[in-house]
View 1 (cartoon, helix red, strand yellow):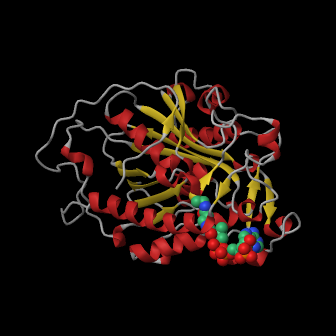
View 2 (cartoon, protein in one colour; view 1 turned 90 degrees about the vertical axis):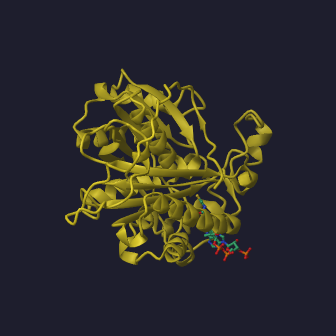
View 3 (cartoon, helix red, strand yellow; view 1 turned 180 degrees about the vertical axis):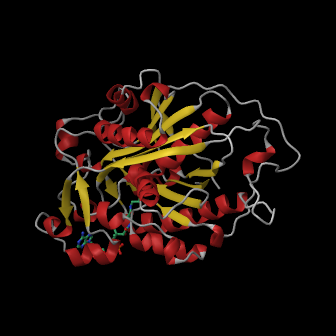
Length: 373
Ligand SMILES: CC(C)(COP(=O)(O)OP(=O)(O)OC[C@H]1O[C@@H](n2cnc3c(N)ncnc32)[C@H](O)[C@@H]1OP(=O)(O)O)[C@@H](O)C(=O)NCCC(=O)NCCS
């Protein structure tokens, strides 16, 4: 498994002083007194620190764009999109509605569920590939909008894998006692970087945001492990060339469509299936869990065929899968964050259940996380 690569804004952290413990004493006991799973962090002495998800929230814009409406814009059909992807409609943010607005609304809902006030938040991490602006960070804009004036904040760019990367980073801050309360947000306005004349890509993506409040809470496990991976050798499969230092905006860059995302669909598909399978298996192995023990699998919502192929390789049953991509399409960093919120709200996940989240995105990047809800 490759090491993870991602870019973040300025941040600082204290390194945790970790001691090795002789055995896994913190694994929760089942009625028969056998541990329910191996807690991979238990070999370190965190002195009872845990990283629980104490609240989740999501927000999608009101405007719905259906496949039938798309078929009036490009040479496509509801039948083609549905059979190849499973997507039926997606949400599109208003002109004056930006990534920070979507993220702030999701954050407010997550804070409300957690019973945490904005002033209690110590760090805001926003995973996004569509920041409001190159700088300042969208995290700072969200901070202002929700009134979390005590919080530090930075953006994280790991494309569709960003939310899992964000959970893992938040966990590191919490376990190291740097912070007690961290807000992780996945938010995207992908409609701003989609080429609405390119049928290969415009049918796939949508806008939205999801958020989670992570806290040290006694007597819970929360995030048990997170796998992160990357392979920059395949960066050219999914990218946006314009707008950075390599190709700043010019009349030519705009005219030649360099400010739109571009994708090599078939290769991306193959890599996604392989990487998601490997990441999920690694996360399960670390916790000594069999896939049958997972109550709810929340995969990146990019394509129903990718999800089904990964599920088949993992030996998962259809009823274990949580899928909402028919409503939203691929919302990149927001995808699994929105799905997690909806899985909880709809009762698919109850307290104590084990969740497997698995993601894949541009970079290439990938990740998986096991959570005890
Ligand atoms: C994009 C994707 C749905 C295409 O499906 P596919 O099975 O690979 O497509 P096929 O090769 O069978 O078909 C391609 C043909 O469909 C056409 N096509 C592409 N988009 C189309 C659309 N929206 N409507 C109709 N036809 C379309 C292509 O032009 C091509 O036509 P051609 O053969 O005449 O050149 C699929 O490759 C995919 O999902 N890839 C992964 C994308 C993804 O999830 N990216 C994000 C990862 S985070």
